[in-house]
Length: 494
Image (cartoon, rainbow, N blue to C red; front, side, top):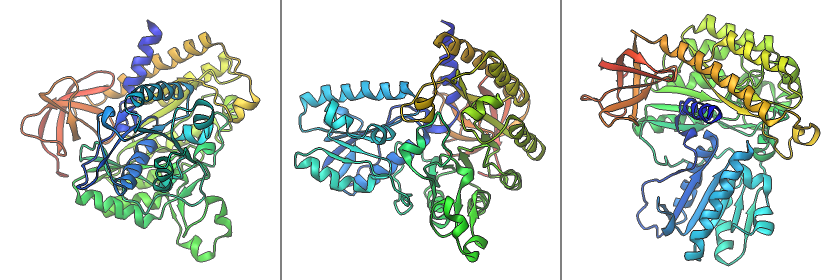
């Protein structure tokens, strides 16, 4: 029962980052007049997958597909997949079996796998398991029309080639299942960090940044359509660097002019904040080794940049951090935390933590707990180590921590996080905070739900307010994860 409770609490914490936690959500856009075929698309995993699904839907909308929530009526079924943990892959495999049960009734239906599992397993789905008709990696979505033409002619289709240039910056994403208030804006793709536990560099390729002008144009377009908040997305947003094109690793070869006019992440944040002063700006995800003080200074300078930083640490042990190839130490991480607290005292900080990484000892685990005590995170994402084939840890390290030990250590982490979350949430009591209304409360159709700048969820009576309003809410009560209050009027941003 304790393990089940811990998992429930972990999921509760994960609900704090917009739609990226809506695992397996079926995404639907407004139908395009004249389109005859129907697309059913589901996304699993990180926010980048949900953003990619919006790109896919945009491409297929121009190929005659309207989306549907009804699996049985679909001509094409796509699942956008995650490989970060084994459980995610098993969930997708189970879902594919359900698709194929429907396919036996509707043999004209085609099934495809997108995303990181497609890149990692490549031809296995087509040749060995024979459960799908097409396999498309994260950098090959523009090739979908050609691949679907092959499928229509009765052939299996695959494209999992990784690109060094593709950012999809020239595609205007459709906003799938949107509340019309919040949206994702992708700014980088891929990752160069090579953490030993992570498959992302192998499934999404080298890191490359998108033209800042196209990003600002997308932000402006979203504002014109009524959106009030955007999240800048990347596997590692802090390493964003635009100098006219090319991979980050090639920056040293750039001309003096390119270097002088280069745009880094702090510059991009400022461009977005100034472009739409009343739009909230969030970002995810950061990496401590690339997180610089100018980002904190920019956040402090602009009120519309939300005061929340997701700063994964993975472990509190220097020895384990080295084994993970995390290019920062415990003390360097503390230095970042100290700078955040000094420059933005009200800023919330969240974490990623892995329990039971290979060779982790009880002392290593205690180091993680002591790091948590130092930071006192607002919330976090906590998991036991899951060996991923193809990673350095999977190839070179024995998964030698017993499962029961992993679960016990995860329970320690979750319980401590729950304590800290309650401390942080209670700091809002008897204060008035600005809330952006995003949706109806899950527990009551008489209440709205929204978030503060620091990413804390709040619920309050609806009264005359509506989705998309910025409202000042006086906080009178709370749980460990949710604020409870009463609206006292519109905020000046409304």
